[in-house]
Image (cartoon, rainbow, N blue to C red; front, side, top):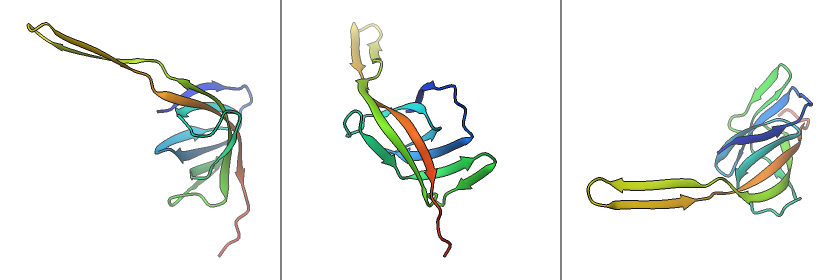
Length: 122
């Protein structure tokens, strides 16, 4: 589940694809992303170490499976519930009708920085 909430006016050529909680997210610096509920408290700073792809301008690095030396730092903004999903069941000619609702717990995070560290060659 990926849902972009808000992207600020500052356009950056740096972006990355990160894996967190079994999902992949395309992230840019200063961008807000909604993802499944995190265990960290609000206002906590977290690291997303599993970077699958890193791009800086025209340079793109694809990990096999991860890109070495790249970390994404984010801040947990809020914990809330997503919009309700309503599931209805109906069987014709038998007066059978059932309604169920479900609200997913989600967290909104803000990407603070995408940093590439120098990796010594082996």
